[in-house]
Length: 116
Length: 111
Image (cartoon, rainbow over all chains, first blue to last red):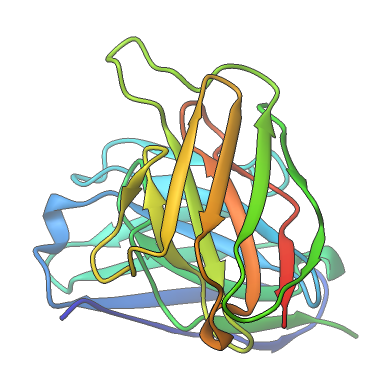
């Protein structure tokens, strides 16, 4: 069955960097676009970034553009989110999700806390 | 960006009774390819979101048939024919016609 397992979250100082990973299994990873979606504590869902199945197209939300970068490694069946210049507003649970138009499977999420 | 607006934002339901949630988009979600890129998700307490309905009215794999979706253009509805205790959580609508994909504010459903 489809499994998406996020990792890499933690507590980080403002202005620092963090890289999230999403290990995918149970499906042909390079056949699917992939997304990152985040959820601030007690808030709704906010889309962060998407990458095409072959990795040549990437789009980021305006709120993270220039600071975050989505990427993928098909040899490792892994999705990444490089997060630089982190701000307190980036504090959230970050989910990876499978699919291009519809996010059909989601991981359990990894919590990123940006705090001094 | 396309704005998604859900009503109501909270809903108290009785097991065995029907329930309905509405979602309105700021522009039509009908693509030139004929598909309408509109979805419903449920986030149960403490869990990640799960896809319920895709492209307005198609139940995703494993979703009980008490869930149904309808609508066209900019107005969409999720109906639960007979609410069960397992249906509590927050329901989100989402569009992926245009980037960025956008979600509604969420509707909290409780028994």
